[in-house]
Length: 95
Image (cartoon, rainbow, N blue to C red; front, top):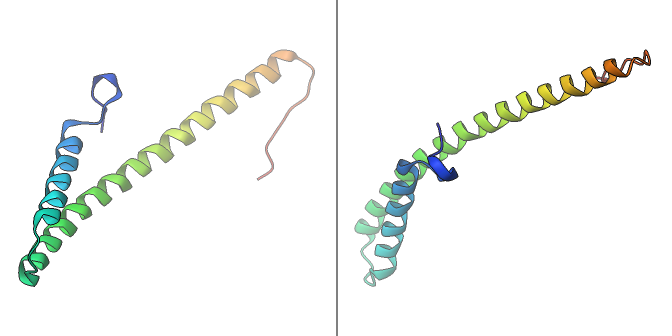
């Protein structure tokens, strides 16, 4: 998933968040207690949240992968710098 220009989230994510706000506002405006209606709204909300949770999981994997790549690249740069110093010191992480 890519970001829109300017670092803003994709349109689908924004539209989803606006739909959740509309749903929440509708719940606030509903003063009467109708358990069947409330159950239907909650089921709808939970179905929407499931999509959001899947999106967050997907982004979590993407963030984790990106961080590991950054660490690998940065480690390679540091090791190259040490090798360029020519002092014969070699560093290997203890794992």
